[in-house]
Amino acid sequence: MLIAVIPFFARVAVAEVDLSQSTVSSDLKTVPAGTVVTVNVVLKNSGDTPSHGTDVRVRFPHNGFLVRIDELPKLKRDDDEREVEAVVNIPEGGEYPFSFDLLASRKEAQHTLSSDIEVRNFLADARLDTAFSIKISSAPSTAGVVIGGLRFHPAAFWVLGWMICGGLFFVWLRFRLQWLREHPKSSVLPSRVRRLPALALVALIMAPVAFLMVAAGLAWRDLQSLTSWKEAQATILDRREVIKTETRKEPGKRRQTSTTRTPEFALKYQAGEHEIISSGFDTGTSLHIGGQVIGKAAMEEWVAGKTIPCWYDPADPGSVVVRRGFGGAYIFFLIPLPILWFGLRQLQKVNQAVRQLDELDSTVG
Image (cartoon, rainbow, N blue to C red; front, top):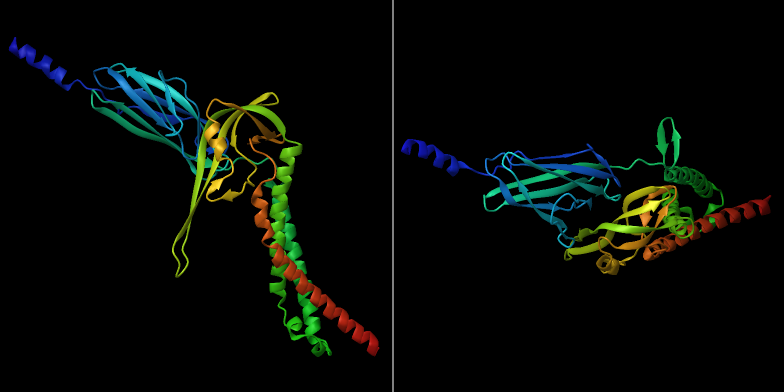
């Protein structure tokens, strides 16, 4: 009898919970920015004793949002810690499947969408730490013109036009300055005019023009958000702060660190006949002051589940904002204006010198 009892107690002694065979998979290999990906989790107890009171914790992704998880009982959500927690029971040799949806932020192309999953059974001293990770690719663009199978964004044509104009301007100005220097009566001109370098003068004019082109593009988007974008009611699914820290160190000076915090929301709204899940906050022209972006109050007030108005682009319904209009960032585009004025002033002097020599030539003739 003693011989029969020993194996029984041996089996009881080795009875344990084993979560190591659990799996995590997704329905996409890569996720385009602004797209929802479903993560499938199968918690598998390969042990020979039930795993009661198993704590499951899912952390929100850094470069995206948790927009759905509703298959776990007694779900607790902590938006400040960016995680959800639940308690499940897994029978011996059994499974507990669940899934959740992640939204890749439209601002995080070429980054990684990841989420940590922690499973704990404290009584059985069993644990599982795993993670889901998938690369965020650039969202397919519908704007621009298709040439030879390649799509060219309208901004590419603006850049190309700017480069062509800059090249033609340089050639014209170089010949004009060369004519001034080689003219028989060029000695009557101020030396500073004759010595003006063509490339530097072109840069003084074309570089500020490039800044103003960027400002014009942003202003056009802001104007469109006020005039032609459609209004809808959006439900907040998740929120996050995009924190960017920049450190600058100059010789002989202390290291300076600046941090900006920009809110971003995952929203569900109706665009015509389609239900859209996307992310956004504003058109990108908000002014950062003291490391904080205007909209911090919205970050604190607008919590998951709240319904707020939003505006989306009819041509691209995934492009959505909850703050629209012209931001304060345009003040930075005033910086190159003095440089542009100085360059135009020098160009005016060149033109005046050309006219002066032409008048001298006509008088002699």
